[in-house]
Image 1 (tube, rainbow, N blue to C red):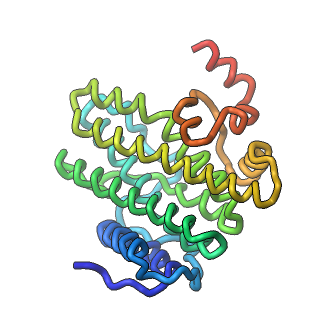
Image 2 (cartoon, rainbow, N blue to C red):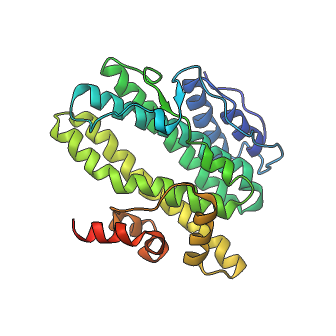
Length: 278
């Protein structure tokens, strides 16, 4: 059944964020994307986005330092833990995309919301496919604990669209471009071709998502007559708590518009040296 939606972009995005049940969130995300494409939602961001999205009772959310080690995905147990962790990332990514559209969309041309609503629909599809794969393997989303910190980057950049573009797609999603090809190869070598194809599809979509973030970051820099790479570095230093470290998938990053002059100045010299010795 198609959910009943509010009549504005902001209110519809807020409804997605406030849906705690995973499949309800997926249905609302898809319905919002359809309604937006059909012109059924007014281009108004007239309601505040929540400080935090709603979450289901499970999975149990743990700090990163309390998360159990999941292995490398070679064993059946390790593969289930890997797929569960990725499903949790995609679940959080639904909220990140709709929050970007609903929080900042009123300050941009309509095509900004076109892009981020489309990203949110992709993330909903990714989550649904991973959840279906988990069930086919005898598990489900919520069966294992998950990382509690995925919303931290959204909270840290809620006040600044440039900071949001810099940190969420251009740091967090870009890291997925670095690690996914090796993950696909491991899963495939373990004999799980179905899961490998799912992860390859997600990887292809994420290159485009990083590119959307880089495009709108560039748009903001051009409007303010700011040099993009140095401004990105300043925002990442200010708002991202982690480290920018190799190995990097330079070709995928470049395809998304994230070239080495952005991220290499933030890499510690010891990390550069260790990468050169690989």
